[in-house]
Image 1: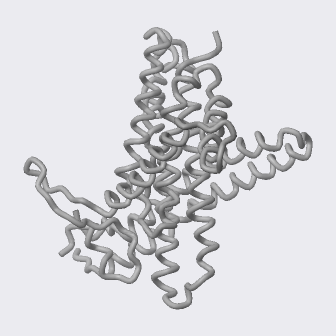
Image 2: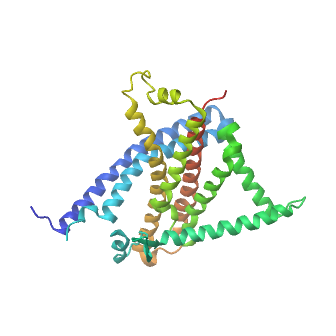
Image 3: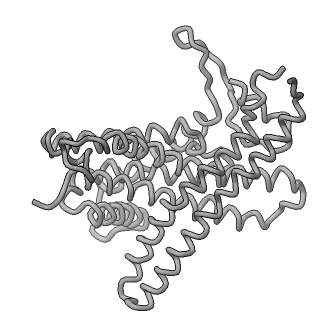
Length: 87
Length: 243
């Protein structure tokens, strides 16, 4: 079965949109981390700076999975790997 | 490779472009925009360090403005490394401070109109590989092979290495995730700014400055901090506990 260029481009765009759904997970995770950090600051205001840096570190690590999804979307949109080999 | 020319026909231009093609032992190699922007970052850093060195060598008793700034930077970086690595800080503060300043300037070089060098996977992967080498080197320096083997089989006893392949994969994922995190963050910022400037045309006049503050300054600084913190944490873990 033969697919033309426009069909593959459209499918790539749909795939990119689906890949960015991965952003849900890090959103929830970062929110939980920030919430617990706020609670920790409320309990112990003296340790605010170290709590903040720990929270940022954890959030940046949690962000990675979302960034993988974003990367796949970028690859599909800009590199167009599915078009390689088509005309 | 195709992707160097693919995106140039549209209004949104986010890719690294080849500028100059040359032959390297029979291979086709390119000087790209990444090389150009990394060259500018290097120039800025070298000029800053030469002037800083001269100022510190003269060393006034009551420091002037520039001497104050240099001392502040060095003190903050030393404090950061010492806070994480403890007694191992002496050996690593030069390396960590160097990559901190380099990554920070690379990330915020988007403000100068350059394409950030860290938005190229060829720049961040070597940084991740250097971190990986440091981890392995310290592990083999401070531990016996028997301990490393027991550590790699960790949840199960050493004579039952079922868990070994999974641990190997998780160790190999360290440099990849480190470099991809930095790369994807900076790249997403670059693409976002390119979309704003490329699609909105005249409407993108003054207010994108706020976006620059977030994508270039805030995000870049956070990612720099995270990269250095994770490198220090991994190396400290590889060296081992307090004896």
